[in-house]
Length: 446
Image (cartoon, rainbow, N blue to C red; front, side):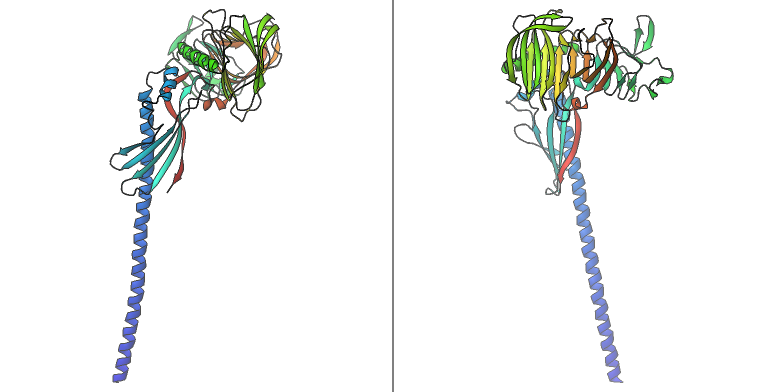
C-alpha cells in the first residue's frame, strides 16, 4: 500500500514537472513573441516617423527656396545657384536640422546644371529614439518653364475646331477654344470683348454644352481656369541676356552687322552662313562663316539680326537659338525647311527665341515639320496668309507668342506637345520663380 502511494506521488510529481516545463516553455515563447512584437512595432513606428521627418525636411527646403528666390528673375535665380559665399543651403555641405524634437533630417542638394532649372534634393530622416533607423527620399524640384505650355499667348487667341492640343494652354487675354484640349486651359481675364463687341468669359467655346461633335469629345478634357496670374513677356529680355553670355563663351555669338544668318543643324555640328539674298523667304545666296563646328551638349547661338534655320539636331543636344535686335524690323527667326530631332528618347531639345516673329516663310515645304519650343517676345509665331494651299504642318514642341498665332495656307496643322519639355526645358528659357516638386521616391530605408 505504501509502495502504491509512493508510486502515485512520484507519478504526480513527474506529471507536475512536465506541466510546469510545458507552461514554462509556453510562457517563455509568449514572452519572446510579445517582446519581438514590441520591438517590431517600435521599429516600424521609428521607420514611419523617420519617413515623416525626411518629408518634413523636403518641405523645409521647398520653403527655403520659395523665400530665397522670391521675386527674382531668371538671371537672378541663375546667379543664386552660382553663389559660393555663402553657398545655397545643402549645395556645398549637408544641412542638418531638428524636427519638433522628434528627430533630425539631413539635406544634400545638387544644383542645376548649366542651362537647366532642375534641382535634385536628397533628404535622410531619423528619430532621436532610434537613430539607426533611417529613411531617405530623393526629389527633383523645378520652377515652371514657359516651354511647359503647348500654347502660351499674350493676347486673345482662337483655337479652331479640329485642332487637338495635348499640353497646357494659357493666354493673358481671352480664349475661344473650339478644338479639344487634353490639359488645362487658363486665362488671365475674367471676361473680355470677343471681336471687340461681344462680352465673353475668359475661356469659352462655341460648341453647345462644350462638346465638340466634329471630334466627338468634350472640349475641355483637362478643365479650364480663369482668371489666373498673367505671364510677363518683358521677362524674356533676361533670357536674351543669358543666351548672349553663353554664346560669347562658346564663340557662337554671330552679331556682326549683316542682314541675317543662316543656321544649318547637322546632328552634332552646325554650319553658319551670312545671308546675302533671299526671295519669298527662301535663302538664295550666302557667304559661309563656319562649317562643321562641333555643338556642345548644352549650347546657345545668338544673332542680333534675323535667322534662317533648318536641319536636324543630334541626340541629347540641348540648344537655344536667339534672334534679338532693338529694331522691330529685325530679330526674326524664319523656317522654310524641316527642323527635326535625330531621336525622341534622348532628351534632345531646341529652343527658338525671337525678339519679333518666329515665322514660317512663304516658300516653305509643302509638308513641314518643326521640332522646337518657339517663343516670339513682341511678335507672333505663325505664317502669314499668302493665298496658297499647302499640305501638313507638324509641330512637336511648344509655342509662346505675344500677338496670337496661326499658320495660314496649311490644310492640316498638328500641334503635338513635347512632354520631354516638362523636365527638360530649352537652356535659358523663361521660368517662373516658384519651385515645385516634380516627383519624389524613397531610395532606401532600414
